Structure formats: C-alpha cells, structure tokens
Image (tube, rainbow, N blue to C red):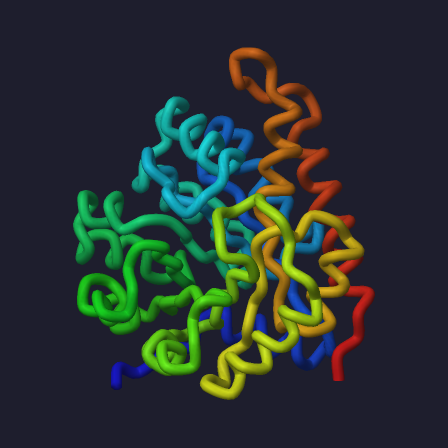
Length: 279
C-alpha cells in the first residue's frame, strides 16, 4: 500500500478534534466570475470561518454538478480561467496563508491535458488534496497513487449507494478525509435527513479511521449545525455559488460588494457549525 502523506488536512482535522468541533469546508469555482473577484473571496475565506477550502477546477462538462455549479464553471472558462491560473490563485493565497488546507475538486480531463507529472510537480506544496469525480478506485494508477507519492491527499467520494461490499475498496487508498455525498444525485438538490446521514457516517467509520465530511444540499446555518453534530466536517458549495450569481450584472460581471456577501454567508454557516460541541 502506498504511504499516505500527512498534509495540512491532517493537521487541520487534528486541530478541530482538539477544539471539539466539526469543520466547515467551503466550495467555490476558481475564476468565477473573474480571477480577481475569486481571489478576493478566497483570501477572505479563513477569516470568515472556512476551515478547509475546496476549489473547483473549471471544466466544460461537469457531469456531477447541478445547474448552479455548471454555470459557475462556464463563467470561469469564459473569463479565461485555466488549470494553470487555478494553481496561480493557490500560489498567491499561500503567500499570506500557509496553514489553511486547499483541495482541488473536479474532473480528470483538465489534469490529463495539463500533464499528470507536470500538474503534480506544480501543485506540490500548494495543494493538499484532490477530489476527482470521474476517477474510481479502479483507476488509481492514473492520478491517486502518483498524487500520494507527490505528498497530496487523494479524497474519495462515497454515496448512499456505496454498499458494504464496495466501501472497503473505495477507502483503501483514500487519504485526508472521506467525502460522503449525502444524496444520490447532482449538487444543489434536496438535502438528506440528519438521521440518515448519521447512520451512513457511522457505517463509513467502520471501514476507515479517516474523518468524514458530508456535503450536498446544505444551505443554512441550522442545517449545517445538524450535520456538524454527526460528521467531522460540513461541505457547502451551491449556496455560495447562488449568492455569487445573484450579485452579477447582466454581463456576469461582479457587482460591488459581491465578495462581502459571499463571505457573510460563510460566516453565518461557520457559526452554525461551531455552535455544536463534539466529544
């Protein structure tokens, strides 16, 4: 088995455990609606309460994402965002923040075109984890194992449909944390009941010692608090993207105060997550 790297992700979850609380993972698409605005938001995320930052790599066919995140990816591509510029954004972030974990989420095609070896060399030290929606464990030689060797965690997705026969294979090479997709469907859709999520988190933890983060359908501080009571981290994405979208003009340019409004929602959700003490 490939040695699992200890990254900022492991250190952050250890810190969260010491603080007796769950973490907040925020998702936004790199370069949406433009590189400057996206960078401004990213710089403000830790101060607003984000414990881990998940950045979407823009792609023209984000098949697992709902309409809101699909649109955000297209806006970013139209603004000229590329995978190289996404790494530049993280590089700029690291100049002022060397502690907050950054995870890139997306699809394999942009990395394949960029070149796996080149990508991992450029991402090492900047990026802490990768989530690849379209690379199952059977394709671990493509990116998972090379990423682990480069010191980057590879985070696998599980879902309600991942049964006990499949789950051990999914988590075998997982590192950093396990991302539990709480509904069967695309992002931005209905939310799962907390009792159901709790049972699934318990089931996942029978197969791995990794923290479990829960996402999909979480939009309010109240719901975030409920999920925080049963998970190690709460992942929110579409809610932020929706706020961003409503603060664009007719040409998809950022209106004044856009970043502040996104960060205000981050702060509200962080307060919900932090309101729950964990033993």
